[in-house]
Amino acid sequence: MTELCLEYGYTSLNHVGEELCGDNVECCTSGDYTTLVLADGLGSGVKANILSKLTSKILCTMISNGIDMEECVETMLQTLPVCKERGLAYSTFSVIHLNTHGEGYLLEFDNPQAIYWHNGCCADFERTRMRICDKDVYKSDLHLCDGDMVIVMSDGTVHAGVGMILNFGWPRNEIMEHLNRAVKPTMSARAVACLLDSACNDLYLDRPGDDTTVAAIKIRKRLNVNIMVGPPVDKAKDAYYVGEFMKGEGKKVVCGGTSSQIVARCLDTPLRTSFDFLDKDVPPIGFIKGIDLTTEGVLTLRRLLQLSHKYISTSDLTPKTFAKQDGASLLANILFEEATHITFFVGQNVNIAHQGLEIDNTVKMKLVEHISANLRAMGKIVTVNYD
Image (cartoon, rainbow, N blue to C red):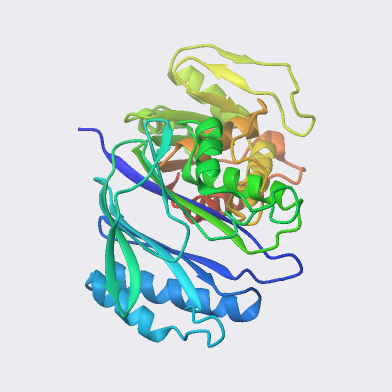
């Protein structure tokens, strides 16, 4: 049976002129379940930021610890103050509680209705109204299958363009039509969230009139990626090292010229090198039969680290899929968009060609360390083996 995994991601736009976002997303994993909470504080600025953080943190902690759903919501609604002028709670919220089999529930309180992405198009969830503390809270039972997504959002999405490009904002049904056109099945949850938030920013003409946050959670097949960086200290262990690297299903990536030569020799297959500089700052890639991607080492990893910083930023609106064909962009697509479980094989042998240059094992290991930290921040399962 194919193992399924959950991935999540979100992007936020701050109200123009505000340093802090009035929306907040909290996500945690406990056992087989992942809990994601998107909270929207009333108004914008510091007060909205504090209240949305309070809401998301309390709800995420309680629900992930197995406390009864209605008790969690009741506690939250009793905790939140109510605006005297408008009679509204100071924070609204959407909660997704889901396991890796696609079973769980969705709770919604005054946020725009969540969107269900299934079989390549958007749909609505069946909702049950619950009356808790004199408030209407909606519950949906979740039964997701491979490739399905749940997309939640703050009301900045449906208000996008008000008084600018659109007179009455961006209706939810039109948002769904946009997602139907733009979302590709291969996109990660983070890429979809960024795509929708970027469209909202365009409607706001880069000056959001409201805090705007989109979060998504996706169920997908597990994909293992093994990445070899550098040769082992003991040359006699080359064959064993490559054998461990090649074990198991999934994609195989080799970074570094010496590493590529070792792998090609142990696999008894030629190493071919491209002479096309698709990016002047990233060396060309190579080709080894049985290896999904072969790149240069330290320079490519440096660019990969730069790309990872942009990828994990919740305010960066550049596309999360990389169209360029240089080694760093190809590797970024594999690690950031495709992989769920990543294993680094880091060899610590000193490369004679690097002597006298600002490239040594310390630099290589620091790059792997920082890239691994950013991958974990994306929710990836990362293992680093040193030899």
